[in-house]
Length: 244
Image 1 (tube, rainbow, N blue to C red):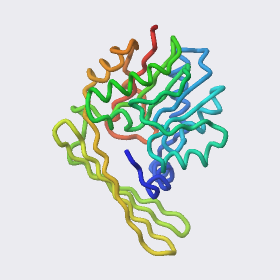
Image 2 (cartoon, one colour):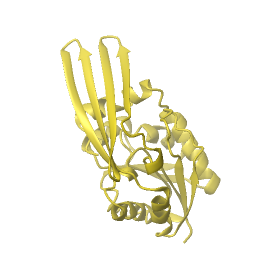
Image 3 (cartoon, rainbow, N blue to C red):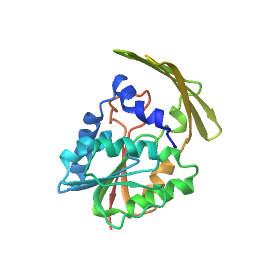
Image 4 (cartoon, rainbow, N blue to C red):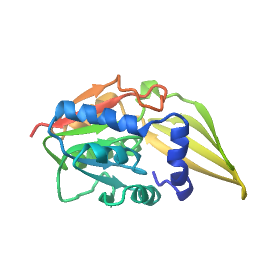
């Protein structure tokens, strides 16, 4: 998704205000990685966004890097993580010229692939950046059976001199979901509003699994992994290991 500068600026603030704990999530990801590969020391965070997970992951692994498509999000990450290699790139076709012991891919990134072909291309690109025995931990978007069609959400964040509201509306459109996000910010300068629309694919669990297995990853699904923001019906995480 091509997040605009305003959305990127408020992304962490609003999600933390909603209860999302990036540090806790990063530590949970690390536990999953080390359970599969105890000697993992290098990590790539694909679709790293503002670098909120990487901030903690950088303290837990000897070497970390990030990849992000949206320039506004990458700019936020660069400000947070001086000295951490951050790359602008498309997860379907990137090539960093090196491999890693672990790769993480959180948020809606895999769901933003427009087709099964694109999903497989993204998983393949990540798999080719894994060392033998390397671990890929990826968060899917909702499966068709647990997407909440017509769901509306709202949140208000208030601090000294500023109030931010975030409202969302989700609808199903065939095998896709359309999520509209609207922000309104009030501060000393007055009011301003902006919105984003996220179109994601409602891939099945089997389609995700096939994307992993088609590129030589053994894969298991961890449905009990509770995301720190308490997102309703969060599917869980896929954990793949490169077997060759």
